[in-house]
Image (cartoon, rainbow, N blue to C red; front, side):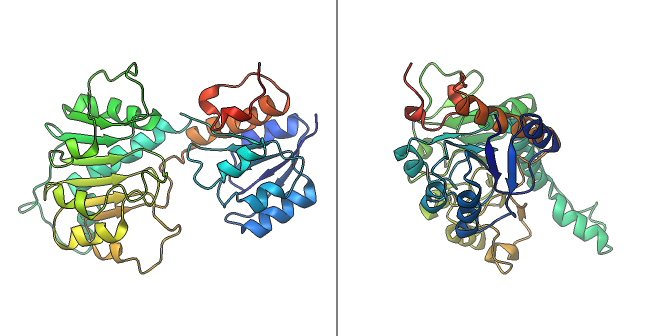
Length: 326
Protein backbone atom coordinates (compact mmCIF):
# COMPACT_ATOMS: atom_id res chain seq x y z
CA UNK A 1 0.00 0.00 0.00
CA UNK A 2 1.24 3.49 -0.83
CA UNK A 3 1.64 5.08 2.57
CA UNK A 4 2.72 8.68 3.05
CA UNK A 5 5.95 8.87 5.06
CA UNK A 6 8.00 11.85 6.24
CA UNK A 7 11.70 11.59 7.08
CA UNK A 8 13.00 14.31 9.40
CA UNK A 9 16.47 14.58 7.80
CA UNK A 10 18.04 13.70 4.44
CA UNK A 11 20.48 11.16 5.86
CA UNK A 12 18.49 7.93 5.69
CA UNK A 13 20.51 5.10 4.18
CA UNK A 14 20.06 4.85 0.38
CA UNK A 15 19.03 1.20 0.64
CA UNK A 16 16.22 2.19 3.00
CA UNK A 17 15.04 4.80 0.51
CA UNK A 18 15.14 2.16 -2.22
CA UNK A 19 13.06 -0.13 -0.02
CA UNK A 20 10.48 2.62 0.53
CA UNK A 21 10.29 3.18 -3.22
CA UNK A 22 9.81 -0.54 -3.84
CA UNK A 23 6.99 -0.56 -1.29
CA UNK A 24 5.24 2.27 -3.14
CA UNK A 25 5.58 4.86 -0.37
CA UNK A 26 5.25 8.58 -0.98
CA UNK A 27 8.31 9.98 0.79
CA UNK A 28 8.79 13.54 1.99
CA UNK A 29 12.21 14.51 3.33
CA UNK A 30 12.55 17.47 5.68
CA UNK A 31 15.78 19.47 5.93
CA UNK A 32 17.96 18.48 8.89
CA UNK A 33 17.04 20.21 12.15
CA UNK A 34 13.79 21.60 10.77
CA UNK A 35 11.74 23.47 13.36
CA UNK A 36 8.65 21.86 14.83
CA UNK A 37 6.57 24.32 12.81
CA UNK A 38 8.27 23.21 9.59
CA UNK A 39 7.84 19.53 10.42
CA UNK A 40 4.19 20.08 11.35
CA UNK A 41 3.58 21.89 8.06
CA UNK A 42 4.92 18.96 6.03
CA UNK A 43 3.04 16.40 8.14
CA UNK A 44 -0.23 18.29 7.73
CA UNK A 45 0.19 19.02 4.03
CA UNK A 46 1.08 15.44 3.14
CA UNK A 47 -1.24 13.78 5.68
CA UNK A 48 1.52 11.41 6.68
CA UNK A 49 0.83 7.90 7.95
CA UNK A 50 4.28 7.58 9.55
CA UNK A 51 7.38 9.56 10.37
CA UNK A 52 10.93 8.24 10.32
CA UNK A 53 12.59 10.21 13.09
CA UNK A 54 16.18 11.26 12.58
CA UNK A 55 16.86 14.72 14.04
CA UNK A 56 14.49 17.50 15.08
CA UNK A 57 11.88 17.61 17.81
CA UNK A 58 8.74 15.50 17.39
CA UNK A 59 6.51 17.58 19.64
CA UNK A 60 2.76 17.48 20.18
CA UNK A 61 2.41 20.07 17.43
CA UNK A 62 4.07 17.75 14.92
CA UNK A 63 2.26 14.66 16.17
CA UNK A 64 -1.12 16.38 15.95
CA UNK A 65 -0.54 17.72 12.44
CA UNK A 66 -1.72 14.62 10.59
CA UNK A 67 -4.84 12.76 11.74
CA UNK A 68 -3.59 9.74 9.75
CA UNK A 69 -0.36 9.41 11.74
CA UNK A 70 -0.01 5.94 13.30
CA UNK A 71 3.68 5.35 13.88
CA UNK A 72 6.84 7.29 14.77
CA UNK A 73 9.83 5.15 13.79
CA UNK A 74 13.15 6.31 15.25
CA UNK A 75 16.18 5.46 13.17
CA UNK A 76 18.39 4.84 16.19
CA UNK A 77 17.81 4.06 19.83
CA UNK A 78 17.20 7.22 21.89
CA UNK A 79 13.75 8.78 21.65
CA UNK A 80 14.35 11.84 23.82
CA UNK A 81 13.44 14.03 20.82
CA UNK A 82 9.97 12.44 20.65
CA UNK A 83 7.02 13.38 22.87
CA UNK A 84 6.32 9.74 23.69
CA UNK A 85 3.70 10.60 26.29
CA UNK A 86 1.63 12.59 23.80
CA UNK A 87 2.04 9.94 21.11
CA UNK A 88 0.94 7.24 23.55
CA UNK A 89 -2.13 9.25 24.58
CA UNK A 90 -3.14 9.38 20.92
CA UNK A 91 -2.49 5.67 20.36
CA UNK A 92 0.48 6.32 18.08
CA UNK A 93 3.17 3.64 18.23
CA UNK A 94 6.76 4.77 18.82
CA UNK A 95 9.49 2.38 17.70
CA UNK A 96 13.27 2.39 17.55
CA UNK A 97 15.94 0.31 15.86
CA UNK A 98 17.35 -1.20 19.02
CA UNK A 99 20.81 -2.76 18.77
CA UNK A 100 21.26 -1.54 15.18
CA UNK A 101 24.18 0.72 16.07
CA UNK A 102 25.41 -0.85 19.33
CA UNK A 103 28.71 -2.01 17.83
CA UNK A 104 29.32 1.42 16.32
CA UNK A 105 28.65 3.22 19.60
CA UNK A 106 30.79 0.76 21.54
CA UNK A 107 33.70 1.20 19.14
CA UNK A 108 33.40 4.99 19.41
CA UNK A 109 33.46 4.81 23.21
CA UNK A 110 36.44 2.46 23.16
CA UNK A 111 38.25 4.73 20.71
CA UNK A 112 37.61 7.73 22.92
CA UNK A 113 38.86 5.88 25.98
CA UNK A 114 42.07 4.85 24.25
CA UNK A 115 42.44 8.31 22.71
CA UNK A 116 42.37 9.87 26.18
CA UNK A 117 44.76 7.31 27.66
CA UNK A 118 47.22 7.77 24.80
CA UNK A 119 46.67 11.54 24.46
CA UNK A 120 46.23 11.21 20.69
CA UNK A 121 44.75 14.62 19.92
CA UNK A 122 47.27 16.69 21.89
CA UNK A 123 50.20 14.66 20.52
CA UNK A 124 48.93 15.08 16.96
CA UNK A 125 48.87 18.86 17.40
CA UNK A 126 52.26 18.80 19.10
CA UNK A 127 53.97 16.91 16.29
CA UNK A 128 52.36 19.15 13.66
CA UNK A 129 53.72 22.15 15.59
CA UNK A 130 57.26 20.79 15.27
CA UNK A 131 57.62 19.15 18.68
CA UNK A 132 58.93 15.62 19.37
CA UNK A 133 57.95 14.39 22.85
CA UNK A 134 59.39 10.89 22.64
CA UNK A 135 61.73 11.43 25.59
CA UNK A 136 59.08 12.93 27.90
CA UNK A 137 55.75 11.33 26.97
CA UNK A 138 54.12 8.77 29.27
CA UNK A 139 50.79 7.28 28.15
CA UNK A 140 48.50 4.79 29.81
CA UNK A 141 47.21 1.28 29.15
CA UNK A 142 43.75 -0.18 29.54
CA UNK A 143 45.12 -3.31 31.16
CA UNK A 144 44.28 -3.47 34.84
CA UNK A 145 41.85 -0.54 34.76
CA UNK A 146 38.51 -0.55 36.55
CA UNK A 147 35.73 0.48 34.17
CA UNK A 148 32.30 1.65 35.31
CA UNK A 149 29.39 1.43 32.87
CA UNK A 150 26.10 3.22 33.44
CA UNK A 151 23.55 1.40 31.30
CA UNK A 152 23.95 -2.23 30.27
CA UNK A 153 21.65 -2.55 27.32
CA UNK A 154 22.90 -3.23 23.81
CA UNK A 155 25.51 -0.46 23.77
CA UNK A 156 26.86 -1.10 27.25
CA UNK A 157 27.13 -4.84 26.65
CA UNK A 158 28.84 -4.29 23.30
CA UNK A 159 31.44 -2.07 24.95
CA UNK A 160 31.98 -4.58 27.76
CA UNK A 161 32.63 -7.29 25.17
CA UNK A 162 35.23 -5.08 23.48
CA UNK A 163 36.87 -4.23 26.80
CA UNK A 164 37.15 -7.70 28.32
CA UNK A 165 40.16 -8.85 26.24
CA UNK A 166 42.14 -5.88 27.58
CA UNK A 167 42.23 -7.40 31.05
CA UNK A 168 40.01 -4.83 32.77
CA UNK A 169 37.58 -5.06 35.67
CA UNK A 170 34.05 -3.97 34.76
CA UNK A 171 31.30 -2.80 37.10
CA UNK A 172 27.89 -1.97 35.66
CA UNK A 173 24.85 -0.09 36.93
CA UNK A 174 21.48 -0.59 35.28
CA UNK A 175 18.43 -0.60 37.57
CA UNK A 176 16.08 -1.53 34.72
CA UNK A 177 17.54 -4.95 33.95
CA UNK A 178 16.05 -7.96 35.68
CA UNK A 179 18.11 -10.31 37.79
CA UNK A 180 17.95 -12.90 35.00
CA UNK A 181 19.94 -10.63 32.66
CA UNK A 182 23.38 -11.87 31.65
CA UNK A 183 26.12 -10.27 33.76
CA UNK A 184 28.83 -12.76 32.87
CA UNK A 185 32.28 -11.25 33.31
CA UNK A 186 31.07 -8.08 35.02
CA UNK A 187 29.98 -7.04 38.50
CA UNK A 188 26.54 -5.50 38.96
CA UNK A 189 26.35 -2.52 41.32
CA UNK A 190 23.27 -1.48 43.28
CA UNK A 191 23.96 2.22 42.76
CA UNK A 192 26.39 4.55 41.02
CA UNK A 193 27.78 5.63 44.37
CA UNK A 194 28.84 2.04 45.08
CA UNK A 195 31.66 2.34 42.52
CA UNK A 196 32.10 5.97 41.42
CA UNK A 197 35.08 6.57 43.75
CA UNK A 198 36.87 3.38 42.73
CA UNK A 199 36.74 3.37 38.93
CA UNK A 200 39.39 4.59 36.51
CA UNK A 201 37.02 5.18 33.61
CA UNK A 202 33.29 5.95 33.53
CA UNK A 203 31.37 5.33 30.30
CA UNK A 204 27.70 6.28 30.00
CA UNK A 205 25.23 4.22 27.93
CA UNK A 206 21.78 5.00 29.33
CA UNK A 207 18.91 7.06 27.89
CA UNK A 208 18.24 10.63 28.96
CA UNK A 209 15.25 10.60 31.28
CA UNK A 210 14.04 12.68 34.20
CA UNK A 211 15.97 10.26 36.43
CA UNK A 212 19.25 10.38 34.48
CA UNK A 213 19.32 14.12 33.71
CA UNK A 214 22.27 15.60 35.59
CA UNK A 215 23.07 12.17 37.05
CA UNK A 216 26.80 12.90 36.90
CA UNK A 217 27.10 16.25 38.64
CA UNK A 218 29.39 18.09 41.04
CA UNK A 219 29.00 15.66 43.92
CA UNK A 220 29.79 12.53 41.95
CA UNK A 221 32.57 14.11 39.89
CA UNK A 222 34.20 15.23 43.14
CA UNK A 223 34.20 11.63 44.37
CA UNK A 224 36.14 10.35 41.36
CA UNK A 225 39.87 9.70 41.28
CA UNK A 226 41.95 12.63 39.97
CA UNK A 227 43.27 10.18 37.34
CA UNK A 228 39.78 9.12 36.22
CA UNK A 229 38.30 9.64 32.75
CA UNK A 230 34.66 10.24 31.81
CA UNK A 231 33.14 9.25 28.46
CA UNK A 232 29.61 9.96 27.24
CA UNK A 233 28.35 8.44 23.98
CA UNK A 234 24.74 8.29 25.18
CA UNK A 235 22.83 11.57 25.49
CA UNK A 236 23.71 15.11 26.45
CA UNK A 237 22.54 16.35 29.82
CA UNK A 238 23.32 13.16 31.71
CA UNK A 239 26.60 14.85 32.64
CA UNK A 240 26.15 18.32 34.10
CA UNK A 241 28.44 20.25 31.75
CA UNK A 242 28.97 23.15 34.15
CA UNK A 243 30.01 20.67 36.83
CA UNK A 244 32.31 18.95 34.33
CA UNK A 245 34.03 22.24 33.54
CA UNK A 246 34.56 22.85 37.26
CA UNK A 247 35.92 19.33 37.80
CA UNK A 248 38.41 19.80 34.97
CA UNK A 249 39.45 23.21 36.24
CA UNK A 250 40.04 21.79 39.72
CA UNK A 251 41.76 18.69 38.25
CA UNK A 252 39.25 16.46 40.05
CA UNK A 253 39.37 14.20 36.98
CA UNK A 254 42.01 13.70 34.29
CA UNK A 255 39.89 14.12 31.17
CA UNK A 256 36.63 13.59 29.34
CA UNK A 257 35.37 12.56 25.92
CA UNK A 258 31.92 13.60 24.74
CA UNK A 259 29.96 12.68 21.64
CA UNK A 260 26.80 14.36 22.95
CA UNK A 261 25.89 17.68 24.54
CA UNK A 262 23.06 19.25 26.50
CA UNK A 263 22.38 21.62 23.59
CA UNK A 264 23.19 20.39 20.10
CA UNK A 265 25.00 21.76 18.30
CA UNK A 266 26.90 23.28 21.23
CA UNK A 267 27.93 26.93 21.31
CA UNK A 268 31.14 27.64 19.40
CA UNK A 269 32.50 29.26 22.58
CA UNK A 270 31.60 26.37 24.89
CA UNK A 271 33.85 26.48 28.00
CA UNK A 272 34.85 22.84 27.48
CA UNK A 273 36.81 23.86 24.38
CA UNK A 274 39.48 25.34 26.68
CA UNK A 275 40.73 21.91 27.73
CA UNK A 276 43.07 19.83 25.59
CA UNK A 277 42.18 16.79 27.73
CA UNK A 278 38.58 16.96 26.46
CA UNK A 279 37.92 15.10 23.21
CA UNK A 280 34.66 15.74 21.36
CA UNK A 281 32.67 14.60 18.33
CA UNK A 282 29.31 15.73 16.86
CA UNK A 283 26.89 13.02 18.09
CA UNK A 284 28.12 10.50 15.54
CA UNK A 285 28.97 7.51 17.73
CA UNK A 286 26.21 5.46 16.12
CA UNK A 287 26.82 6.78 12.61
CA UNK A 288 28.63 4.28 10.42
CA UNK A 289 27.80 2.93 7.00
CA UNK A 290 27.14 -0.48 8.52
CA UNK A 291 24.89 0.79 11.32
CA UNK A 292 23.09 3.17 8.98
CA UNK A 293 22.16 0.38 6.62
CA UNK A 294 20.76 -1.80 9.42
CA UNK A 295 19.02 1.10 11.17
CA UNK A 296 17.46 2.43 7.99
CA UNK A 297 16.09 -0.96 7.00
CA UNK A 298 14.72 -1.58 10.50
CA UNK A 299 13.08 1.88 10.62
CA UNK A 300 11.21 1.13 7.40
CA UNK A 301 10.32 -2.41 8.43
CA UNK A 302 8.98 -1.22 11.78
CA UNK A 303 6.65 1.21 10.01
CA UNK A 304 5.19 -1.44 7.74
CA UNK A 305 4.81 -3.95 10.55
CA UNK A 306 2.67 -1.44 12.44
CA UNK A 307 0.71 -0.09 9.48
CA UNK A 308 0.06 -3.57 8.06
CA UNK A 309 -0.70 -5.07 11.50
CA UNK A 310 2.14 -7.58 11.35
CA UNK A 311 4.15 -8.95 14.31
CA UNK A 312 6.96 -6.70 15.54
CA UNK A 313 9.88 -7.27 17.90
CA UNK A 314 8.62 -5.85 21.19
CA UNK A 315 12.17 -4.80 22.09
CA UNK A 316 11.76 -2.15 19.37
CA UNK A 317 8.47 -0.75 20.71
CA UNK A 318 8.78 2.10 23.19
CA UNK A 319 5.10 2.24 24.14
CA UNK A 320 3.71 -1.31 23.75
CA UNK A 321 0.37 -0.32 25.28
CA UNK A 322 -0.47 1.25 21.92
CA UNK A 323 -0.30 -2.10 20.13
CA UNK A 324 -3.53 -3.96 19.36
CA UNK A 325 -4.57 -6.50 21.98
CA UNK A 326 -4.17 -10.10 20.84
